Image 1 (cartoon, rainbow, N blue to C red):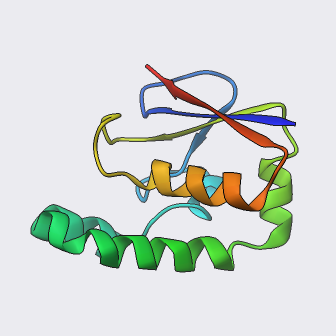
Image 2: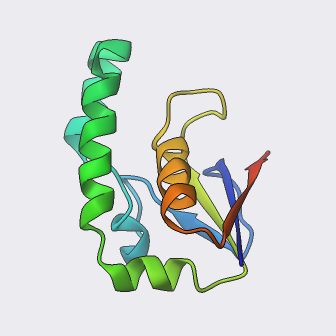
Image 3: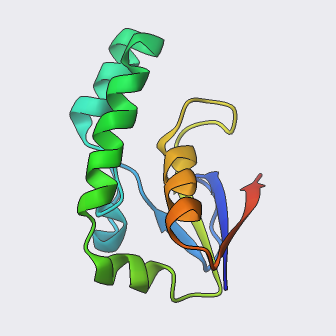
Length: 112
């Protein structure tokens, strides 16, 4: 069983995984959106949300099985990015994806 959390970028716990487009963590980059998606939302707001969702789901489906296994072979993982908790954010999309695909993962919420 893996406990999954999300948090703002400043979260510094040992279970932190940076999944931002700016991220320096090579493993975390596998789960990051691309700049085109980020800029579409910044420039076009809610008009770009469906585009972002579709593009991000495409990214997630291409993540190698071994990467998912490595991510979820931990007791606790916290996905971080720069968005505020209430914002439209890929953290929420990845949580939905993970919970739907991996029954042994339990989303525990946002770490403030």
